[in-house]
Image (cartoon, rainbow, N blue to C red; front, side, top):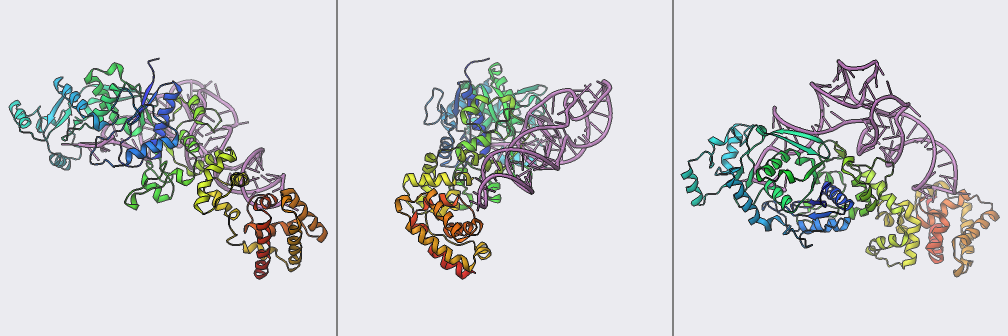
Length: 508
RNA sequence: GGUCCGUUCGUCUAGGGGUUAGGACGCAUCCCUUUCACGGAUGAAACACGGGUUCGAUUCCCGUACGGACUACCA
């Protein structure tokens, strides 16, 4: 169909990258990988005011964590650099000059304040063919005046001269043909007074120079795409213009509108891939990583927000996503962010992860609690807990009692079940379990001891086992009792039995 | 306000002129399980509305409503 595919993910380093951005990166990545193309990271740092130190590093780290490594980008090399727009200032100046030379742009000397005033007077004010002649620019001013203002170094911008009467048709891969009339378009600023380009100029110049074939970005860019087409036209690049695909937005879980960082704190849910630490705690946010979500699960979840393969398969590895991905299958309507679904994906991924890997992921959390379990033991723990967790921190939260004493008993259940006559039975049980040789302490052995005792004493499993479970874990929930006992070990089980018998009596 | 985009169960979605409108999350019930989960089964749950076009529209067209994005010397 065309040359090798080259796509770019072009965030601006104004803070943490939220999951909408991650999904955009993902779709770009998928298209590139599917066709053995190139995935480029370009940092759009042309706004010096909004620039946030550390944001670029954050973006790299987030992409790395997600497994979406760019092939070209800042610090990664590539033949089309530099990949940071602030380092390409001279390039944009040159192209802005070209626009000027071609009569496609003009100098504008209006101050931001003057324009502000215009907008206040007239809400619908637009800097365009209808208004430009009464404003301060090289089209309205006598030539000598323009020359003078320039020579004296008056601050000025360069604006695109939009000619009315043109029809712009964007053949969007997601939305089909979208038409705009140039009469509706304003004369966008191309080069700001500080000499840096606006998004519009930088974007078009870079996409052209970097030989981008597909622009996959959020729907918020659709309206300005008309300007972008005009720019390609002005430069004479229209025939090699990239194809556009505008993605549906990711919406707030509740209410309306697109998902924002504030929704995260407001609803107590992560909206960033990894945590963002700001000096101001108000502007610090957790991430999916810290929440205990596996990157593969996040990606799988995100991929399905606005796209699906048309089959009933839902669990896809990154490679499978790559194989199945196609732009035609991207939906048009906004997709609401649903944390429950994200959790479900995570649970599926945890269940599918082998215990050795799981143990590696869980270990730091356990060590943070001050415990240093042996590998094999921790793997055993993971095996018992794997089907009972949805997020990584659940391993500790739901299974802490494997590492340290029971914090509290399920009193209600003890009161309901504990009977004086059980006391002797439990003491017997303690004795019998003490008799088991340490080397014999295994699930089936323990089970046999308990069962035979229950038979001899005429206790029903239903009266004994729940209490045994509470004695050992404090709760009615958890892995099979005998497997639990095997992992806990004889000493711990005997100790907990003793303390439990004593406490249960008091709860009666 | 203007321009542009969108609208299938609560949510993510499949489908597409004639279907019992399919799946997934969540929810409910049941089975499995001497717990909890996992797993399995079942159930409730949707084509925004009004006009066309058509033998027949959820599907095509036009309106309406609703929602959204954009409307900066921000991206």
